[in-house]
Amino acid sequence: MDSPSPTSALLGRPDFKGGYKTPGIEQFTRVPKIEPQSTSPPLKLILIAIAVCMGGSFHFGFQLVITNPTQAVFIKFVNQCHYDHYAVLLEKESLDTLWSTIVALLFVGALIGSFVLRYTAEKLGRKNGLYLSFSLGQISIAMAVISSWVFSYELYIVSRIILGISITMSLGLSAIYLAEISPKSCRGKVGLVTGSVIQVGTVFGSIIAMPNVFGTEAAWPLIYITEFGLMLASFLCLPFLPESPSLLLSRGDEWAARRAIQFFHCCDEMTALKVIAEMKDDSSHSEKPLGMIEVLQDPKLRKRTFVGMVVAFSMAFSGIAVINGFAVEILQTTGLSQMQASVANVGFTIISLLAVYVAAKVVETHGRRSLLLSTNTAILATNIVMAILMQLFNMTKWQVVGWLLILDIAVFTLFFSIGPGPLCYFVSTELLPQKARSAAQGWTAAVQMAARAFLLMAYLPLKNSTNNAAAYAILFVLPVAGSIAFMYYQLPETKNRTPTEVDEETRHLPQLCGQPIEKPSRIDDIDEELIY
Image (cartoon, rainbow, N blue to C red; front, side, top):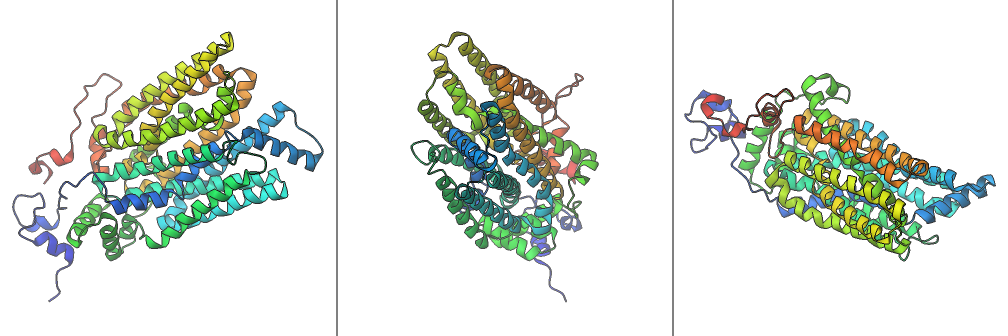
């Protein structure tokens, strides 16, 4: 006689409490409920998340800010290279346009990366995809260093495009990987590591790129050499990590999936079997991974994907792209010296990092929906104040306005780092089932990177044709307001929810036509008689 499978043995145990009332044949078709778990992830899982993110999201934050305090150095490098190659020195307006384009090309590359993300995640797998993205990153960083030696800003441009591809792939793959290796009860805190490490990257980058560190004409290649070493360290950690359990299960390798769950969750075999049973139930209708076009052909998945795209859009158009890229210049135009503006820029990144601690406390207690709505509303208010202060300085030239602007940017940074900053990287993975995650993450990354590329290319020319205040108001007030309105009516709560439970949450969202708002309920709380 054949021995029963481990899953059948587990479900058939008389002492196993699977959430049903009486034993019988039905017990073999029901998914056992997993007992509530701690919302604190295992230390091993946190260290894994940090190691993965130090090769991806860290470099996103790092690249966002290194061209900010060193802008004058890089612009001079570009102009000297242009003169050596073409015997022509560029005028300031042309040079500003060229430089803003070079800065934005990082996100053009990132946009390209978003469209290969889905293919990489499904064909190579999450872990092998990270190998590829980290390798591309190291190649591009080496090219940036070489460009300084051969005096070629054209090579530097190519390096930024390739680095953008690498960064988007790393961001998307790490977000999917971390969501799939984490227990549902602490998925938010693990996902928060992505945003946290981005802030670590901005702090480190803003310090290392200061004029009195490596932000000089002779030393700026050391910025990239340091970055290369950090990415190499993360690359060397990957061989010690298993593949995503969800991906292994979708490929039919249940034994490897169980071993991976035991490794990541720090649990025993019986607990791992319960997790696998729940994963099978949630993905029973999700055999084949969907492509980026296919995910838009299913009405329900298209709607969820679009919600994730709007969350990413609100993050990009919050103003953070310009604060990261041009904060030093903005502060200098309100009366501060370059050193004062550079120190203030470091202060903003430190506030971002400290705010992550607050975010870790509130992300599980308040939920994704309420946190995104409240922080985006606060960001809208700070953006309005920021535009007013810029215009006030244009009219009065009062020195105190520059210091008030520092305070307002600090408040903006705090709310951004608690809400849209970290949440936009994993909300879409919680909204959709496993078959659609990589495609949805690709669309989310595409929206974010396209928006950042547009903003960085448009801001300086728009500022030069109007002024700082008008440019900031045009780009960062109405888009945030529209995003808040959309999320209020369309964004369900995803905290600790499976895709099935997110469906239930969606049915209780506020309606535009005056329908009553029902209190959201959890499937776990419905009487089992109604379910079974």
